[in-house]
Amino acid sequence: MKRKHFLALADGSVFYGVPCGAPCDALGEAVFNTGHTGYQEIVSDPSYAGQTVVLSAPEIGNYGCTPLDMESRSLFLSGLIVRRMNEPSNWRSRESFRELLCRFGKPALSDVDTRALVLHLRRTGSQRSFLHAGDEPVTPEEGVARARQFAGLDGIDMTSRVTDPNGSYWEARSSFPREPERKEETAMFFDKEAPLLAAFDFGIKRSILRSLSAAGFRIRVVPSGTNAGEILALKPDGLFLSNGPGDPAGVRGGIETVRSLLGKLPIMGICLGHQILATACGAQTGRLKFGHHGCNHPVKNLLDDTVAITSQNHNFAVVKDSLPPELELTHVNLNDGTVEGIRHQKARAFSVQFHPEAAPGPHDAANLFRRFREMF
Image (cartoon, rainbow, N blue to C red; front, top):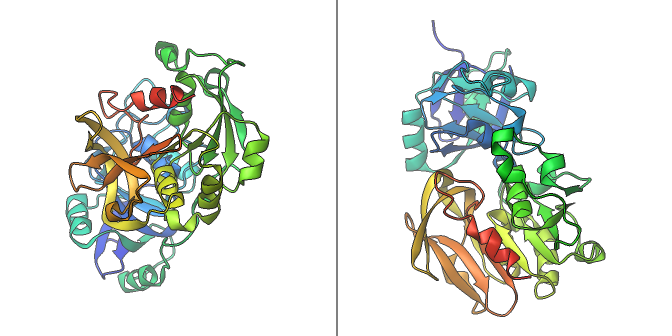
């Protein structure tokens, strides 16, 4: 029987599959992730807002899902494509991956030739796409037309779609308890004498908050639209710029706020926050062909001549030739030479393109949070 459901790309390509998530359709930017584990962390990462994610690992869902591994309060991606969706067999599982996707209303397709799809996206770059997993009939030709009509994500402030508008104080143990055998990750209690950190929620992940807490910070999470005056009114000791989705050029308010606070507070940025800091200092950003999405990206630290294996999730990067004199290049990607880290020559500010809290195996980059703490 001919398959009725598919992923249609704007270049006219169509990849067929079987629905394994919520019964609906979705527009998004098709990207691929090369990680072999961590599918729940991937789909709950707000940085994937507006994107349809193709997982290159062939077997997905094996160990199920648990609320303890959620990186945010919801799923913000547009849709998901996998080779094979499996039922869970793990003592930690509280629901299947399929059930998680359905609970948050996210469409997905399984039985897709993801090897061919990933290779296609590597050749052609990330593309506008239409995922058909709903009940209403849609022809492949109509799907391609809808993909081409999708405006894409360039120039849009996607952080407003994922940020928590209320903000919050965050304390690891009370806000996000872990299992007893992992209590060392959240052993620090709320210390009223610890430095207060204002953390921009551009799409912040809970694992980042745990890492900042473990490094010795009190944390006040603020929404992405918070201005400089509102941040200074909190009387923070430092500012953290989180990861997040989309085009950094679209986050105009965040860029202006960071520009106003530069030199007044110690600042650390990661991922989108790295791009916002660089832009606030006068650098430019540009789109990568298919982005960096995975947990095995080698990054060289030019300051100490070491290499870290890092986790990354971004479609844009800082343009190396646009760095102003006050920004020193500190890290480079060993795969393609793109900018992976900067530090300001005069102000107490630095940033990295990768996610230091996400450990692909060894905790190669965890020391960056401690380095930030030592700036206070």
